[in-house]
Image (tube, rainbow, N blue to C red):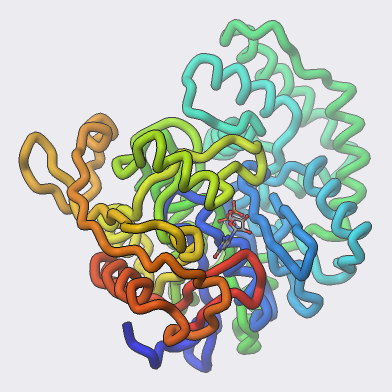
Length: 433
Ligand code: GDP
């Protein structure tokens, strides 16, 4: 690994994207929090309240679902971009919670007026659909809101802000949603009065925050300010590139950042992919390097692998280089951040999945057919563990030789340079390479 790597932001890199390069929960929140210190604007560009970032500042822990992690730095302007589906009820609950924790957001949090809103009827539809399809969604209405967006029957922030005309729109949307619930065999129905009350109450709170945030980001870049685009979930959950149909409903890969933030793709200067030093996944669908029962339990325990939003235990396994290589390709990653290296500190040896075998043949790419991916046999290489604490390391030279060798191997297999290594939950537990 080269010791003269560059920081993600520099004179040539004003606009940087941070994406998850596995199945989400890679620790993007911590990386964004660390990078946000150097950023002027931080933008969330896809997903909704189904994603949760956990950020530890001092002895306080913040779980952010919809507000960009950059909010924890006083200087950063934070933006919820047009590509996000915004749940206004939980958004303001999160905002109020930050307020009680002394985080002042006045004048530095904006919401795109083009973002679509998640309403209670979307949650009813989500829950009814999950009964039928079992994708393992969080039931928070994200999928149905994106479906409505693409179906051109959504409700946008601008609609809620308009006030009186929201009644007509919501009457129409609820009639359709209730008909759908009936067709899906659900006995539950959305209530118009509840929606009207919510639209009035939260529309009034959204109005001062709503604007053309694409213009805001564009202007910041024209003024040579630093912009960080913060992704949610991970590449293998991308609606196009993930393990379809076990995916989320948005473009989680870097291409989605331009669309969801409202800027052109040529504005983006660098893409940092966050990977755990091992692999986890929440929900159903293939996970080729899933560990066996005992080791899976050990990884889950050591890594605290329980969902930030739902508390669901995460499925755990070994680093899958085929997945990360694929992620480097579909995201155009210019660098990697490896997190949770410390979680492996006590292991005697560490398997790394270097490729797959399908029916005896070697396979070096992620198959598009989910049934095939479910059948692949990972080919493992086993590296020696270091059995020493890495939590105090602040530069590469502080790491045990076996840990450095492990990182070198991951970098070679993945085909992208490692820029950061995270060795604990705290802000200072990071190595810049
Ligand atoms: P995100 O959605 O990608 O931000 O990931 P989550 O917040 O769901 O999960 C990351 C979890 O790992 C959080 O609880 C973080 O505090 C924690 N975390 C992040 N980096 C590290 C690290 O280097 N070591 C350890 N032990 N925990 C970490």
